[in-house]
Length: 412
Image (cartoon, rainbow, N blue to C red):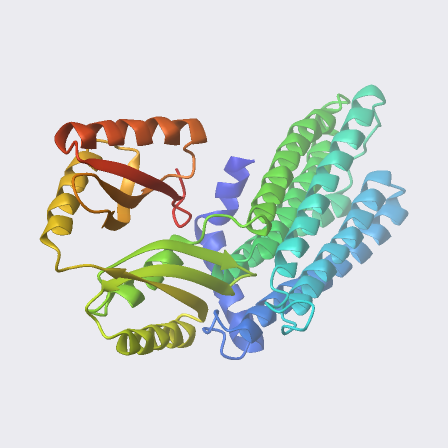
């Protein structure tokens, strides 16, 4: 299947398809370059679904007529498989239409995640195609069917393979343009159909040389690959519904936007929530000098939040952490703690450093950032090891350590 994938995604075929896809996009989608615009994004989905409906209805009619004329169960079955693909395209259109609905009282953050659900439904349809193909292939193994070569039938098979191959590349082009899991699932649905139709073509050609059911064994192998693709697609479409790690491009954009102001000394605890493609809500902690005027800092934070909403289309909430920049004791011990923490690779960074208490015994209070994969037992051991190191160098200080998990980066 990978070789077939390369065959259709590289070389002249792919280039011609890209040119044709661009032409269709330019003809039917106004402002097609504004892929972050929800309206434009929906139009990409509608175009993909509509083209799929038209192509599959044509294939259904041609295959059904051919199957009835030749009295071929294989052709009739493949025809109704194309009819079921019309449902996939309808699901894609419906998913984009519902995802574009504005927020309401019951769904204050919109309906964007419905696009993921549409992709999940199509992924299940891909799995269903794989299941039906492996079932029919096994039936052919145990109950071989005599196949007679027919030139008209073979030409119809070639036509269907070319159409399905083009649909695969077309939907793949659209999915990459707007980063859509739903259209990715639709593209692989077309790829699976193309391969299953190829099995019919193999059986027709093989019938000229042997009565051995070669298409059945090829079908078993191919159906396994289709099932694998369907399960992989389902996993990928479920992932954003379960609040996956945010796109690193979004993370870096937020950080650059916040840190470009001189008054912001540091950031931490960035959390990004996705409510559908291009619909984000985030929160972040910013460190500012305790000497700054609180009114001015509040106005700056409001300004940053407005700029993120305007430039990044992200609803950002900022929490302010004042930092004491005048105390020499804090400066010295913060540098000391930084050196100690550098000995522990599990520690990504630390923040909110402060000293509480008077006299000979004082508490060093700070948060350390660790990867999400660290367990509570590992946190406890790490806290003990850091405390021991600090006490060895500074016996008059006791550490109070809090752990923060890094939710902005993937542990891989």
